[in-house]
Image 1 (tube, rainbow, N blue to C red):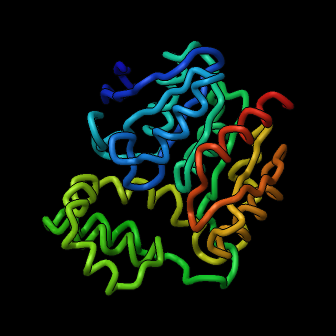
Image 2 (image 1 turned 120 degrees about the vertical axis):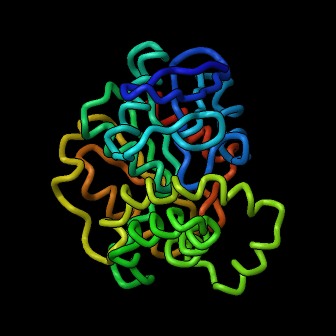
Length: 267
């Protein structure tokens, strides 16, 4: 494990497993390796053939934060880890983390391959769009000392969880973990809000992506994530679509790792 300094001085904590070609795993909203067994399992599976980097996105876990937030600062964080890894890397992103990866590659980071797992695009009426003031609501709740309300908004408006389920979650041991990273939910909100409005994906946001890209979704996931993944594969310049066995918004490491290995090997 170690740390890197991002361009604005933020300290980003990372861990490394295995040896070989570097692969960086990027978590989605609220997640970081210490509380994300899926990320750790995938890192361990990939470490058999790759040098795998996992890291705490800014404001989470052991990484620090620097305000004000901008998506460009998270891209700088990734740039610092890529430099630490040797100058180039394969990027894998979960959920909203995959959209961050797409933005990073479009911005010109030295990435050789991009894998996007179930980017949460809402491109039709398969589910309700995010509120247009989603980010503002999140920031207001945190500024008022109500991080739990920010988490609840994320769970209901973004994840689509029924309010009564969230009420039960508030009593769980995991709720304080979510509250601790509540300010960062707005960070992912800035990444995803414009592409979760039930409209076709923009044709210009990722036009600069020139690397081989694999968009992945599980065969048992939510319908809107399937249509979103298909839309991403159509709009990204060098993308292929890969369907894997999975349930809801996850897929097992022993399913994902071979697909990633094969993709990198073939491209």
